[in-house]
Image (cartoon, rainbow, N blue to C red; front, side, top):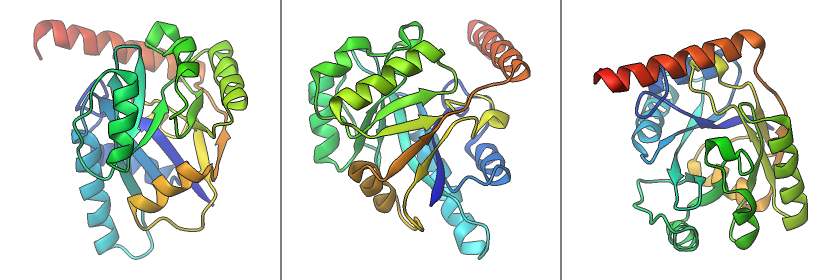
Length: 228
């Protein structure tokens, strides 16, 4: 059984840390699989994957697999996409799902009922092509997560839990058990998600974590305004 956190942001979007820093913190937390899912780009995930392969080549007893991903802002809301390679995807939900599957990608609505952060809301019920649903997001409200769990049950889709970390210390604040013994390739992880070999582990942020999260969000916005 593997521990996975499949929703993390790096400096390639609005995260505080580089892919390498994220991987170091994931290793400290004992996480086996992560996905760096920056907004509208695979860059962080692909860089993280290359670094994880470097670790695997140089270290026999310390391994972590990075699955390239992104959090794409569709016309209806945010969607997590996990792929083996960079894939250009449309923003219309139905077309996005179809093209993702044509390229062997896995598609998961992100925090679907957190409408403050561009969740799909009830649009999630309009499409049957989801491979799983993010049923627990460490940044979402308890009510939003409860509604996502309900959608997973109604639609018969696997559920995953993720940290949605923007600060490296928050990686693993919620995570998913992947019910396979080992993951030596991205394909194995994607196949496990498709088959529903997952079990979400609920978690959340402490008061201190939330203060750090808000402080970073303000700092990031100020940097953008100042062009830093």
